Length: 417
Image (cartoon, rainbow, N blue to C red; front, side, top):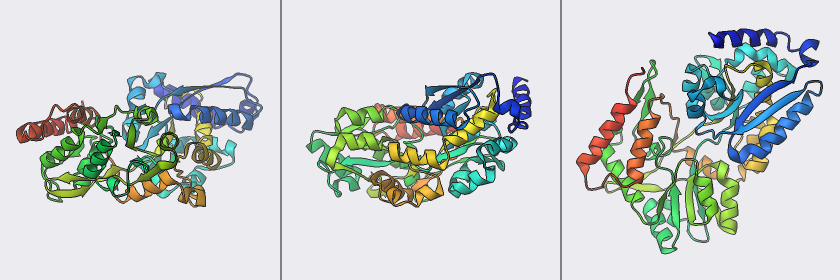
């Protein structure tokens, strides 16, 4: 099997990382690196700094665009052709590990001696939750890069008041009165789960990799899935609501037609530019379920950088992944991209504590859930979200909503082939 062959050869290379043969390598070390579109400039700067850290080695580092949110889907179409080093969202780690798309970093720990550190140093430098999320079956499979992989509400305080943004009902009414729109992605199981999590519904992962989901029943809080969907449909049907395609929120914020949007810290700069001196952020609103206001939940997670199991220069790939996630690099991600760090030292800084977007993320964290799901979850959840975004389901059709929920659950819980 090619994977075993690659691992064997790269493991052998790691054992001599401190030798003259590696440091004075005559051949060019070729590495590919994938990251989000908005991070391309910074990744280019970090790649140059990485090269400068090893002046005796010739590198060819090719940087490509791949969003953390879609990394798994792209990589799993052809793991061998994917980047050597790539960023991804923490909820994708199980599928990537199962596909051999991530190396076990414990097996490459010796590579870090070239950077003057150990794997324990990496673990100690980052918040415990990020290390736990990057660990599968007791093995570390990725370097934490950010602890901000969640979402909240950006808004223009020149258009909306704090009272307006407290609930979806008042938010949409105020936006409509101002001739503006409120944007959110619904055709994504990462975003649309927020309504169900808020109402007490759950998802989970079985030992065999299948997913558990209870959205077609009644939650522990006493709400029915049908009533949650009705609440979502009432939001989506508002003339002031804009259903935004996954990955297109930044563009829509920048376009200027929105007065509020559900997104994360990666859109902080875009939101600041769009809203100007009205730039503000807060937790997600409440939404109506039956005759009750329910706090919208969210998915709380991390951003990781991992090394492909098929990377031919795996030792150097580990060093690159470590470099772009170390304290200095995380500081630059915060300074330039307002990315919420996972590094303990940076988290404790006054600059982070006073940041508008990160403060909103912290406010929403009380209502965030760790989303643990298998690979069968994503497509049915996306399709279900599309039904809501497109208005295919109707709020007065209980039977139709229940049927759609049953179809969703059937698809999500399907056995792995």
